[in-house]
Length: 291
Image 1 (cartoon, rainbow, N blue to C red):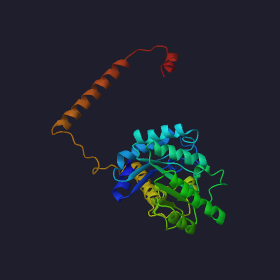
Image 2 (cartoon, rainbow, N blue to C red; image 1 turned 60 degrees about the vertical axis):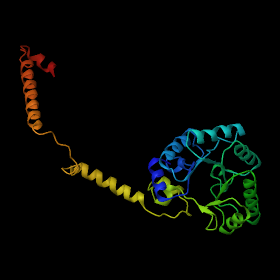
Image 3 (cartoon, rainbow, N blue to C red; image 1 turned 180 degrees about the vertical axis):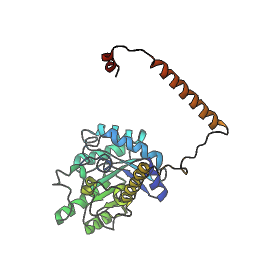
Image 4 (tube, rainbow, N blue to C red; image 1 turned 45 degrees about the vertical axis):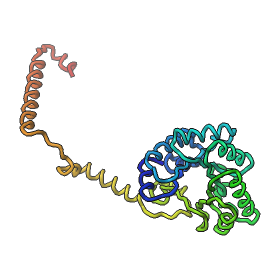
């Protein structure tokens, strides 16, 4: 979501970076992804594009930025590419309107990644953040949606919160790559939220939204908290910065001159103060009025 994390994933050899609207929940503190604006996602896309040069960069289309019309979707997709430095965009869903929007974007020269299964932007219509395709009819429908997304011209599709067997059959049914998140190990690739997999956040808000399918590969948040606590303690005790981290010295002979100038200025200040205090006051009652 930012330049430092983009540099890290670049150096790690990550193949694809999705600047997702999940930025709203893990960076901006929103309860869901719905409040994320286009300008917010654009801001983060710009930062990531400066730090990641190796991976394919995909920008998420936030809720309300592509549903109104195909022209709106095309306009915003172009901005993510031209201004945000993205190379492709992702949008959620596979209903008739979204499939038509995908076709329009692809015809307009925009590479599109689809997203089916649990689509967080539509969580309220799905009954909440729940796994999808757990019943046979729903599973078959997911496979049909995947086929439709491919036919609409998408180059890949995210499959979220789907039983492993369903994701496997879905992957076998289409020729474009599937990117699984909470969908088992048989998809073409995997995606996780940066903050989740690093154990970045220790705040109760993040604990509430961290998914159970996510493996934590580190506890970066613990290390951050411990470092900050140590910093606070050392500043308050004056252990930091100390001589080791106070490296700048005055040029030879300048320190003595500096001290002399300070002493001279202090002497002049005191002399001026003595002169100002020489005012004579005869009315005892007026003494209190001076303070």
